[in-house]
Length: 417
Figure 1 (cartoon, helix red, strand yellow):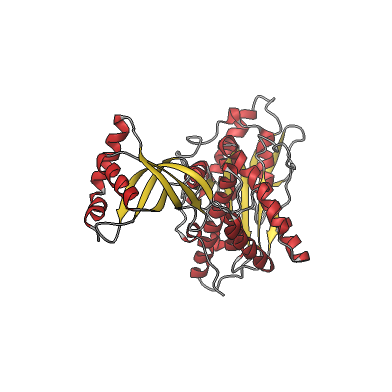
Figure 2 (cartoon, helix red, strand yellow):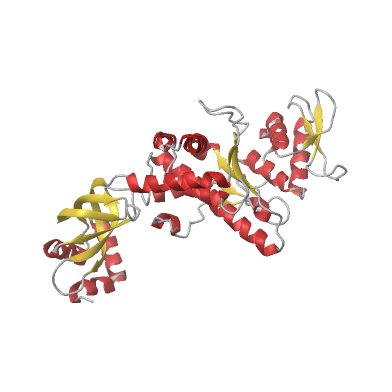
């Protein structure tokens, strides 16, 4: 059975997050977040030890109270070995840390790059994994990698949207600002389409990581409730925790085609756990059996999110009607009044004439109406009170330049199609 999809889910998802430095060949890049290797004088040995253990490195003895020896994941006997001081109290502590960081930079182990990223910029780590059959050909692995990357980005965006505001369905609202908050996130490769790690800097992204923690656990609890009782009420209360249609669609994308998938979150050891969250959060896992409940929840969120009464100020960027007279369709670039980039509205002949004149002289217009959830909050209905708005000269010049770049649209308004 065909399932209706909103426009925001179907559109190409913009890659707001930056690629992980581990995708680059050679030693640790000079263009890393820290501009090179982390400064040994600013590295806490305890934090380095926590990160090494988290990423599968094994502690293999050392001088008690002075230093420990670490080897990378994989079969024993490899050439890489790190000596990490237990404290910075000894004269050679900084030298040992510098040698350990250099060895990490030269190591071929992907986990070495991940440790260096977290040291360079203290970050909360979000890890996704998918249980998928062993691919029979390289093409299958490539497809799985693309799917995992896409699902991870959707989950990050859903979390960023929930930070901006709680809603069962966000559509185009808050999307630009939510995407902007993802600009500092580093996301790694997904070899074989099985697992992937994102690094969310604490300074800029801690609210995103905290919101995702609460939202994912609330989604898991809501699915369990629905499967046990058949009721959907838990999804209604889960909205306050950050669950939305965007999040349910992202989890569906993560699980689809797999035997199961999960998300784990680890707090930056240098910053510690945020208030109200456990020091070691439990991973959240979903299975193919959860998909019907998630689909029902997404459809429910889309259907029940109410329209919003707004007063929008926007620049007219497109005018269209079927003849030289009568009602027409206008597209506005939103300047104020709603957290969406553009809206489309139908105006009667008089309001359409006002919008056309404002467009001609480079003035925005103000209009009242209801921002409809259908179509992703991109359509304004019951439009009224259309009036030009005075702006300063600088803004007017910018709008006039936009008019010149889109002159064909204005000719359509004057002559009809």
